Length: 235
Image 1 (cartoon, helix red, strand yellow):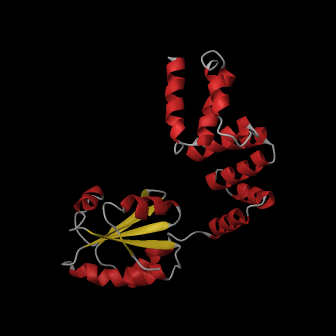
Image 2 (cartoon, helix red, strand yellow):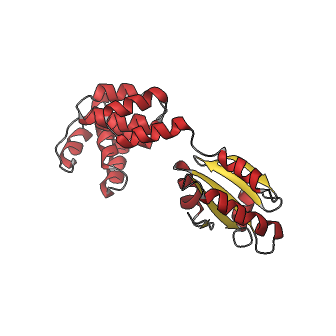
Image 3 (tube, one colour):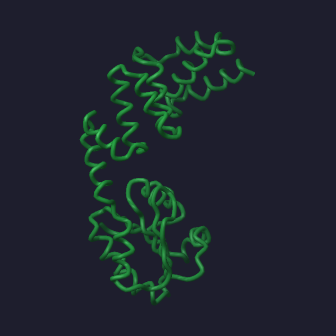
């Protein structure tokens, strides 16, 4: 897999977002830097051999001074490993191929992580329950299993499962679907309008209103307006 040339504009997508899927090694370099030219091909060779399990992102510090400042780079080459949007390891200066190999090996998924990924890809409830037993707080597994439970009409089970992990955008959507249950495939306008008169004094009505907005999603142009109407009714 070829290295990605990253800019300040593409850093969010190419590094931060990508690091939620695979480890990303950020190589901060410059054309005038001799040691960078020595280290670069070694990084590319070792990381390419991972078959996409580790991704190489190259940042020209002269063209992207903001990223250099963000990493607080004192000298180059400077290399940082990122997972889930956070720096987990790094080094400065040229390194031997053996040292780079050791650095990259620590970033590769473990056998257990590979097994969980395979079970998650299978996607059936039996596989997901095995994965859950291996990693009880894995959000990907819990969300996938919760979705299956909701589709099967087991909303209460899904809600109990979601309590294992902190709330996130993904878990809120599953929880909303679990509470709302099966709804007609309409645009919810009639239901939301009817609920508005009850949201101030009826906790269940307010929760249903919020859940429907969650299911509609922020991309629905009506969601923002309904949220404003909810705020006006509550305050």
